[in-house]
Length: 137
Image 1 (cartoon, rainbow, N blue to C red):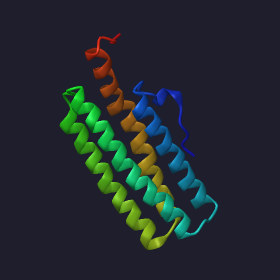
Image 2 (image 1 turned 135 degrees about the vertical axis):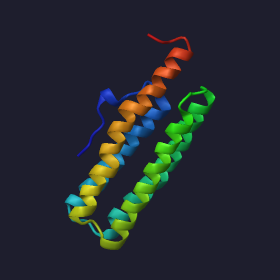
Image 3 (image 1 turned 180 degrees about the horizontal axis):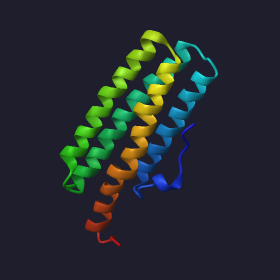
């Protein structure tokens, strides 16, 4: 399981709450797969997660635009790449169900990507916001 850890916090309340929800849902997805739940169960979590991630990215991009984040375009491209990768993962689940391959891809495509993205990319955004709002260290 993935699990939220405090070192993933950006200090942007809206973003952190959305990240926590994403991790809760990913954990739910992985648990359903591990417990051998059917396609329908897993599919529901995948559908929710796909929609939620898109909404989260939109909210995060709005924050970037408001704060005049200089890496906005690059960050948005990373989000778009993730959405494409997630769509491929969803196709895998839709076609083959919760197979070992699908679970492994979930770990790679979703979990590892999110961990890296939150720590690096969202961390950079949070630093930018702190520095430009006068709260920088």
